[in-house]
Length: 331
Image (cartoon, rainbow, N blue to C red; front, side, top):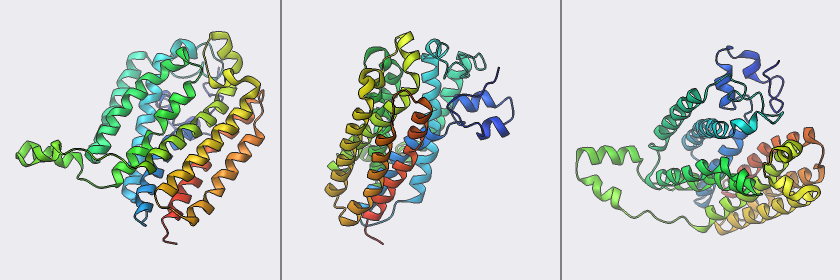
């Protein structure tokens, strides 16, 4: 029996090049399927870019690198937690039966250890960001912890995933708007009373532009994860797992079109509210056309095509990131 997962590319680097003993752990982190890392990272990049564009500047490469590393680590931790919770369901679904936990390649105890290690590494990155970003990161844990249970209690777990995956838009904006790194504040607190004032200083509320960007991302995720869920329609129905794809049924293409239209409208509002002008509006035509292409190509009953469309959302997110950068006006 092959351990290759159906939604991983046959030529993925883990199956081709990673040492055999490492492969279960790399697959637990979904490093054989990097699309999810991109989709978690890109809202953070967009938030960083939006904060810079408002000031007519370019995004900070250091912050982009930190959000890339943090997204890889948090996705690994989130996937481990999801697989721990869903191990019985995953064993009954053809697409997920060979994941490391249900296939017996990784024990539940080992997965918990892996999760904790990834979370601690992520905490190190979070401490290098400012206080507002830190508290936003802490708040996101509630969303992450609740997500695996949503498919049991609501037809719209994809909406909860949207709330979770796009939290980085708020964190990215917060990280780029200044303030000393939290690690520096804690060091001052340990050495002198001066930092007490820093820690007690009220945290400023975010402006509307990153909030609208976050809302845009929620509907974007609701669209692309509905596409992803089309792969499991039959298995989900058999085991009683709920999804937006099952709820919408034959209307899924129309639903995805509506979600994408709302997402685009909110993204434009985010840019306009942040003072981005005509350059942003023109550049936003690129992600809009890509979303329209996805909606037009979507067919219920074609899981292979659904996977291709889902993966193409990496390009959608990059195009919106580029549009925000262009909107900063230094071109």
